Length: 109
Image (cartoon, rainbow, N blue to C red; front, side, top):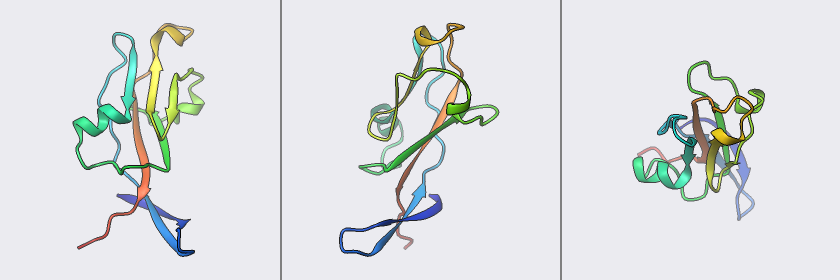
C-alpha cells in the first residue's frame, strides 16, 4: 500500500492509512462498470482490508477523477464499492473506471 495518512485510533493514538493499488476488474459493456467491493475481494483475495475508510475512482485511461466526468453513479462508497450503470448516463454508456481503497497500512515484516 502507498500514500499514507493518519487517523485517530481507539486508544487515542494515530494509525497510518494507506491507499491500495488500483483495481479494474470490469469494463462498461453490458449494464455498466461494476467495481464492487464484493467482486473485487473475490478476484483479489486479501488485497483489500475488511473495512475500507475511503474509496477513489478515476477513469482507467486518463485517470480523470470520477467526480469530474459528469457521469451519475449508482454506488460510490467504501462499503459497497463503485458502480456506474449505462442506463443512468446521458449518452448511454459509462466510462471505464478503476478504483482504490484507503485502509490501515500493513505492517512490514
